[in-house]
Length: 378
Image (cartoon, rainbow, N blue to C red):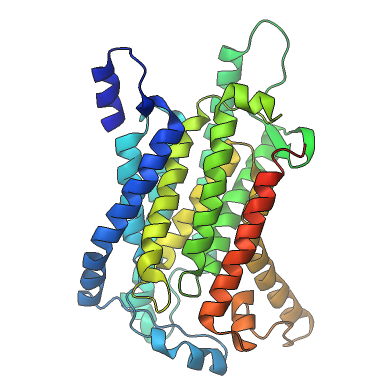
């Protein structure tokens, strides 16, 4: 809204606000301050509603280590949703197709996570289990979102290619899978594009959710990943820069810089109160949409494989759970790790929680650096 007001006021003159990187920076600062200022009030309200966490694990030692987290308010992700949505509404071009789809992703997964948290904390299910929505229920809505976004993103990219392509022959970029260290990339058909979109959206959303198990772990790692995608999205959305760095140019995708900046700022502001000892947890209300938004941006910018590098910690966390479950079933009860996800394995091995979180942040920073370095190595 603010962007459109400034655009009307400028009367065709060019100002700094038209630059997506400038507006992305403004979004990051706005979300940081918004979250910092309003989260204490949100924490008091969550305490009033008695929405305190009850961490329970299938491991007596881990339950003992996390007993101090009982009754710490959760569903703090509501403030993340509000800050990201408000900054995008104020600072981005609301006529942009990718911005609209990003908002759909934010509210869809935010609602799914909020329902899941609410059921865990308040419903009759709590009397017998701390489960909220069942896994197949969450997957149904996540896959549904991936199908919807994949279809419309593909169709929008194809229609834009027909309109914008010059008379000379050129390769489309809307269906290219950008491969790190490999210049040409891979062309995807409609089915492959749809399947990849569903896998990326669902996988990233759940991977961030799995990572959200220690004070500040998920928020810090998401902030680092979002910083990488601020840079990647700016490159992909700028035609000259994309051509210079041999990356596929996706027209009008640069507006997602504002969305990535908002994710970065809101996570940093949330981390102020979420670091050890945490005063609030984001819950599924925050982790599901944050992961989904990162996955959405990766799909639009054709950087799905780069996400594996930038979000390396999320990949490790998700793989550790799959390996643990597979090994448990294969050996009829054996455990490869002390507990999954893998951050609990190190915690049970003698690392304190702050040590585990900071070391995982360092690993996340190394993955982020590798992802940025790969931009030039093609």
